[in-house]
Image 1: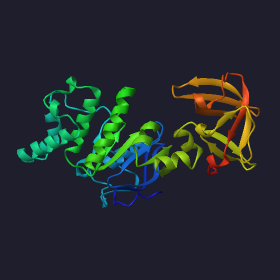
Image 2 (image 1 turned 135 degrees about the vertical axis):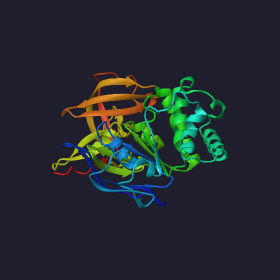
Image 3 (image 1 turned 30 degrees about the vertical axis):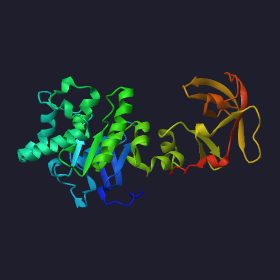
Length: 339
């Protein structure tokens, strides 16, 4: 397990397990998340991401292991006794209340003085840039604005960490990209720990200081986005974080990762120090700034190359045979799976 860089840990899981009948939600999960970190849990549906979030929030209890928040063992504490707030995927706003009253709901429940409530709500609405919409009801807002109300309602109580369960999943692609920038801006401005659960690798890679990939309830790897993309530990991590060419390595069954953008297509054979395979073009997919090329080698190995239009051989066509070349330094040997 990789430790967070420098800052004190806000969230710590120590060998936490939670099963649902015969199915493992999470299995012996250990994580440390630092103060001020933007941390993501990434993985496919059913891998244990949301279960982990609910365990931290106190909506689920582990069958074994410990959950520490700000250094205190709160494994058995109820949700309202934990210094974290959870933002739900469906926002869970009160439809009959204004934006202001939705955000003020938490401080009012704590019976704070009205002046303190006004100060907190006003400051938080400024952070999420909704001050001018304070009197509107949720149905009068766009999806992105509703998302920011949900964030404000969670932030107004000044939690030690904000837990986000697929917060952008309901938004259209353009609005999702805009809200990614907003999430990062808000997190930097308030300076608290954000823990994001997502199955969207682009979201996790673009937002996270560090991320963890989960698979079948177990932790596969933790690290920075660049570390996990360039040097994944396993084929599971390699393929989940992006398109991957997995090349056989030696007679022992090893596998070497070569990212598609590192593969060059050429009419000429490899030069000294390079490696190469002869392959035939099966598909060409124009993607705007780049073209994705799918190829098949003589030994039935499939390859993917991604390059700019200018970087590809001129007049490349389906059925054409050419060389796939790469620098060995651009590939990465994956760990062999456990027996």
